Every structure is written in C-alpha cells, then in structure tokens.
Length: 112
Length: 112
Image (cartoon, rainbow over all chains, first blue to last red; front, side, top):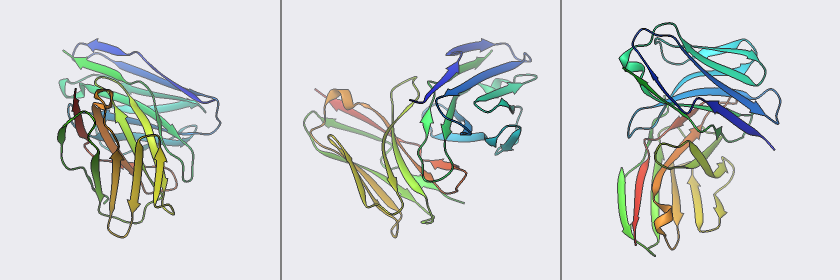
C-alpha cells in the first residue's frame, strides 16, 4: 500500500533562518507531488507541484522554492524565512488521470 | 480560473441529525471532485472521490453527489455523531496533472 511521510510535525524558526521540509512517498512510482499551505481557518493554497524528477511548477511567487531530487521525494525550502511564511504546510501525492489526492500529516511552521 | 465555494462556513447540529454540506464550483470541466475531512491540526483524510462521469458515491453514513451542469456537489451525512465534528473540504481536480482547487471548508460541530 502507498504511504506518505512528512516531517517535521512542528517547527519554530527565527526570521531570516533557512527552511527545509521533506516529504517522501512509498509504494508507488512516478507520482505527482504537491506542496500546499493552509492559513488558519482557510482552504489550501497550492504552492508547487511536480510531475517528475526535476520538474517543478510554481503557482505563487514567494519566498519559497521546491525541489524533487528523487522520484518519490519532494522538498520545500527557503533561504531566509519571513514572518508571513508561518502556516500549516501539507504535502500530497496523486497519479496522472482521474485519481484523488493523499495527504501527509502536515508541518506546523511558526516563524518568530 | 476555477473557484470553489463552501457554504456555510460553520454548522452546528444536534447528534442524530441528518445534514448536507455544500460545495459549488464555477468551471464544470472537471476530472473529479474529492471530499476530505480535517481534524484540528491534522492533515486531510479523503472521504469520497467522485469521477466526472459519476453522479454519486457512498461510504457508510456518507453520500456525495455531483451535478456538473449546475456546478454543485453535496456531502450528505446520516445520523450525525459527535465524532463527525471536523472541517470538511471539497477539492475540484481540473487537469490531467492533478492540480486541484480547494474550498475553504465547512466546520461541523455535532453536539451530544
């Protein structure tokens, strides 16, 4: 069966520090991978998605970047965090075609 | 650009009541629509996935319907229980690569 791992669960970082959130998927090949951010009490905003190794599409210009160094690994990064980067970050995977999403457990990021 | 709306934003019902959650979308050219449940501070758990060619899907006490022509989906919960208290989000998938647009969710409280 397929599983998705996302870590860490919570993170408190000072303004200006770097960020690296990692997401890995097991039990499937060539998944589509996504990073979403959720503001308090709101829906999900798509940040990045990837349909293959090294292929990253950015949906929102911002202080963040994403990379996909391996087929089932997706990394969200920042060189210098801003206060506005605080939020709940969710990784998800799907397959091309009429498939649904499966989400990770999320990372609560607080920038102080 | 697809827009997804969920009304009401919050709903409170007594235990045992049947209820309907609504999801509206502006562009009927969709691949599928997915309903999720989110508990506070947690990731999203998939409840039901309806393909564009389907009219409804059922799982236990849950029934989701889809009317593409009117841009609407409903999630019906029968005999609600306090454990059903959570935020329910719908997501509309539009492209083969799997980009989806999420509603802001309806927060459901079921009172014992």
